[in-house]
Length: 120
Image 1 (spheres, rainbow, N blue to C red):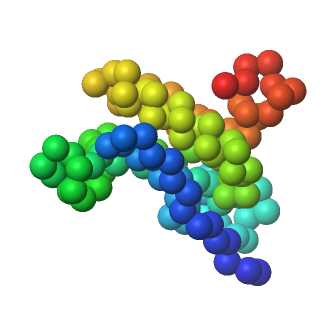
Image 2 (cartoon, one colour; image 1 turned 120 degrees about the vertical axis):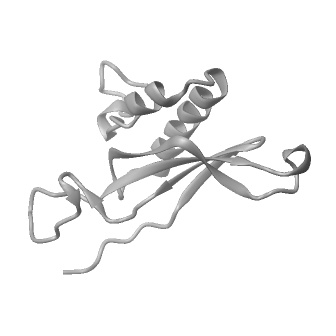
């Protein structure tokens, strides 16, 4: 069986960045290719630019801002972009963003499909 792969996908807004990545996670921890019901799942990680005036510094991971989601690695890029925009808004609007990011970790494909009643 071919090893799943995913090229990191990022969205930036000023000094903030959200990266969608696949680090080997599935429904029950590590992805199990021998389990036909398991799916390789994406994680989002939030980063903030550091340094003088937040301009020339490095990107640092924000505290409590990296979560596995229910988004599979073959999710459409337009859904990942929309999800990243929602995540960016959450960390911009609330200095205590942890709870909101935990809620957003439940993102799944159905949240972004037009047929969904509760689309984001």
